[in-house]
Length: 119
Image (cartoon, rainbow, N blue to C red; front, side):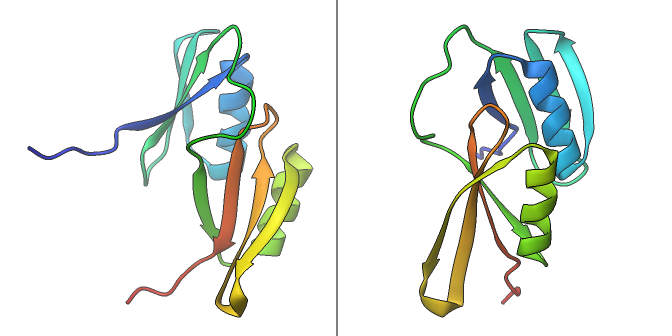
């Protein structure tokens, strides 16, 4: 049996607004399966992102988060902050690998690192 990643789903208080925010961040088409309750972001490359309304999203650090790659990390961080993200930290494993941690408008953490060359 083989599994494939179909969708990564975020619990949130406003799925319509958060789906639109992520559409601006990573691109794709927003489809409201149940407006105000469940919305999906369909991307041409990669899994769909889902946004489901919950009364009380779990507080604290995400147990799952997205790791995104960019050719120009600083430019992407600036763009996403201008869209409403918050930078929450910077980390590295020596000079070879570093990343920036951000949070979307509802506080969901995600990271951006430099694109890695294929081996």
